[in-house]
Image (cartoon, rainbow, N blue to C red):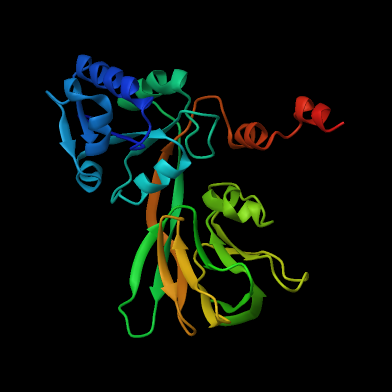
Length: 296
């Protein structure tokens, strides 16, 4: 590997010293750092000599591996830039993240393993969303976490039709609908009462948001399935579809979104010796006696 990309959350000032140290560390080992423009600004003028500075899209095209400094949202944004499966290290600046599970003390040992071709990783399949709106061209994008159809106003519920592989499932009266990847199952899906899926499971989960009927429950389907969510009735409120929570499209009655598995994968580097269940225990505080003590 020759070119190592570095992308940090644009407003993460505490990442500045890490960017500077990382650039020095890479140069000393004969690797060329490539910094996203806002990341280079965080590092200051001293990091630019001898570095490539590029837009996010250019960075993704040039890098042989990518270091993401921030939280899960930063890694979500980075995943949408990638067009090929390069190793991605998500480095968290706060508590352990579901996606950014590399801690700062683990950064250099993990990166050294990546540069030497000795690292553990998971292939996370993305979802492909096709937003279909009457009178407008379809929009096709890949997402790592989820596709959400929901309303902007708090007062009324909406009605959506859901079909899987062309077979009608049901009409749902609810605040909205989530179609989540296994990676995204610990995000909005979990908050809405959906199940936690193992990240490498070949599946998607369809979860209604606050459904009117208590019998409506999440539905798990294979990741080769084709899930269609179509807005039947907006009932006077604004409705939109959100892709990974980072880009939204307004929907009218009859509009919808089709979701299936994407051919794209995210090559997510994992911390040596830490598994998915340890991350769940840490983030969700399963078996945390201190949390139990506070409730008694």
